[in-house]
Length: 433
Image (cartoon, rainbow, N blue to C red; front, side, top):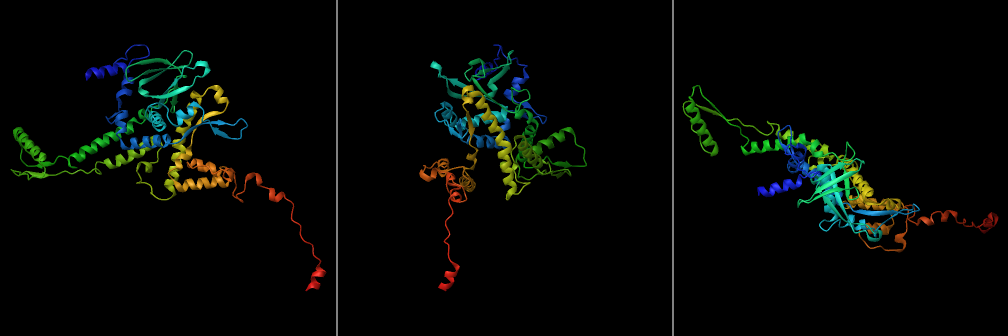
């Protein structure tokens, strides 16, 4: 077992200069094993994910974005609209199956987890042979961030070194080989690790959870106090301590006290130790770090569960939390996965945020109604979004709310000649009466 661990460490810590990282290299081992916080708790990826709020925040963001449909689009040259580039190789890779082992949901979930935990996501773009100028991406392989090192070269380009799980080292991978998606950055080429910056609050939460477990393990009771006006010898104190420990290990029995001893029990509740308040504060703090409204992780103590307040918070989550991550991924794919010629032709990948409405039938119906009645969607386009077959005919025609008539028919009634008004003779009409 020790041999396997040693082998794994040796293969993992191989540097870009074919030398082993020193045992005193704190930066590597901080990433590998985690670092201690001021509370004394070690904060690593594994320990952070054991905190319920961290787990929920990360999975909420990753799951929401990963389940959104993504397509490759091409703008029409005349600017009249866009179409899905169904024949482009990336359409199948991004929308359905990036590689032989992952679905699109699993792939993008891994990407988001890498960004939210490490601040960087790396994807290896594997190409075909490119014979006859037909070079294209065949697979998108996500890489574990801790196994990737990034180095800036003298020509200002970036080179990526990767160590796989078998210990094979791949050096000098360029931006043509690696899709690098970065989180917020201070140096322009590496994203900041959220875990590193949120280490203290996560460490405090881990320490508070550990302290709470210890308190509950002891039945919310601290050690009691024995009161006596006698002075005991060291031997008597030791005998008394052993007797009390034996009694404590067999809770529920009856204790016998001699020589005027009185036992005073000391109780301590989680509220007295402020554990509940500390944990509640830490939930909100962790939510702030990840931009998630507290009610979405089950913390509704300071807000009502009804009304528009939570609706606005949810809307803010979609706008201010999810949208920036979506834009980062879309822009990175466009920059790295499309050639200059394809970009010039108007090719790009985009998530369909309307997918967030799929579980809300009322909101989806209202959205479709507004889009069709204002001439933006046709009824067949709505049917396609609902995975229903098109009807054809007038269902493919844009209509507006005024009379639900085709757009190209608007104004015809007003421009048509006015109907003739029959002229009558007032005198003749009088004589008829």
